[in-house]
Structures are given as C-alpha cells and as structure tokens.
Length: 290
Image 1 (tube, rainbow, N blue to C red):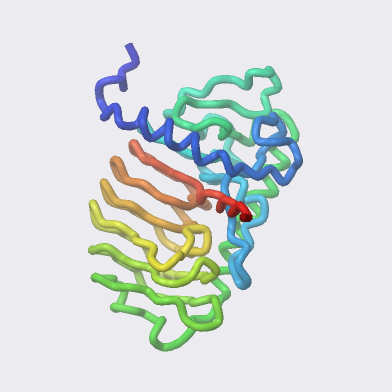
Image 2: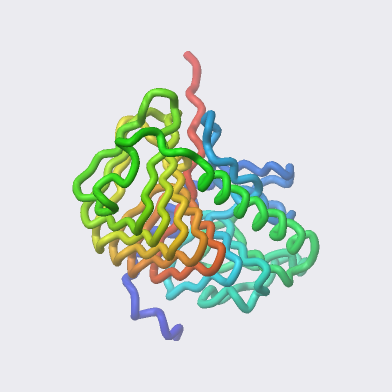
C-alpha cells in the first residue's frame, strides 16, 4: 500500500479528473500536438492582451523552477512541470514514470493531468536546451514586470502592504500597475475587477503572504493569465487558500495544505506544494456562429 494512500483526502482523484478536462484547449506552438513527446509543449492560455508581461516559453509550464519542485502527495497539476538547471533529483514526491516511448525526454506522474509532463535538465535533448531557454524567458519576464512604473499614487503602497477587504479596479488604458516598496500581506479575500482584456501587474519589493482559507476573486471578466505578481521575496500561501495569476518569484514559492491557484508558478529558486491544485488558465472556447 502506498504510504500516502490514507494520509490525504480522496478528493484529489476528483480534482485530477476535472483537471484533465482543462486540456481540451491545449495549444502546442511546436506543432507536436498535445500528445506529442516533443519536449515542453505548452498547455493552457497565456496573456494576449496589449501591455502584458511576455512569458516566452516559460509559458509552456504550469510550474517552472531553477532549484526544484517538491510535492507532498497528492497534489494535482494541470500543465507541465520543469526544473533547470537542477537535474531530475530536484523533482521530489512525484513518483515519476519514465516516458512511454523510452525517449527520456520527459517523465509522467499520477499527480500531473494528461497531457502534462515533467521535465528536468538531465533528460535527453532537446529537453535541457528547451528548459534553458524557458528559464531565461522566466527571468526576462520577471525583469520586464519589475521595470514597470506604478500607474498612479493611488496604486503605490496600497494599504501600506496590508490588503484588507480590497477590490483592485482596472484603470483606463488596459494595464494597471500596483507597486509596494515593502512586504505584502493578504489577510482577507482580495478582488480584481475589470474586463477580459485588462492587465494587472503587481510589484512587491518584499515577501508576499496570504492568510489561510482566503481567496483571490476575479470579477467582471478578469482573466488569471492577465494578472502578474512580481515578487522579490518569498511567496507563501496559507493552507486552504485560492490564488489567481502568474507568480514571478525571485526566490521561492510555497503553497500550504490544500491550497490552489489558477495560473502559473515561475520561481527562480524552488516551489513547494502540499496537496496543492495548480491549474493553468484555460483556453477560451470559440463561440459558434448561428
């Protein structure tokens, strides 16, 4: 018997089944198709709004980290997981299964919804090359966000870094930049309100912490792929929290037990999960005419 079998709620099975449904909108820019063994094909949606932070091939991953990605089972990830420059030893708790085609381009895990895969810097080429490019793109995205200027005095050091019962409204122009010269704490639910094309960039000079069981809520059509959290310190999400957006972390990202996110975790050190649900933004469905 797996030693984790009775240690966590069986709800992860339902979550993994639902997560697999999100992949119906898979896009593979490499032309390999969602089931291809070609390394690092993208899953889910990235922002296409004017003024957004370009992720490049870092957007091919639900989770990308330089120093490792660990999980306490059972986490549920929709999308690819990548680590570089660390080797596959940096994938901890995933119980990986070797590639079915024996290519050693990737591995799979029961905690990663099909067609998502795991990649590491010591897998066969072109995986190491692709990962190297993605990490550079991740760093470029972080610097791009860090270089943005706060939209106004009203979006600078809001709440002195304590975001209590707030709604962030999109400003005219399509891109709203918030900036804090300190750590940021989210002790209550936080709401973003705007249109599907609005972009939010949140620059945090210190750590980012969210209290247990709190939620980020999207209103008015705001999309998770259009929210970018550029954080210079550690990111810590409490147990049972729900988060939205793309986290660009200069250091580590940690999610507490049974926390969840719609977005991506892009860390320049390590990512730590504990029965966490990570879901890439879904690709909008095309409306049928007539």
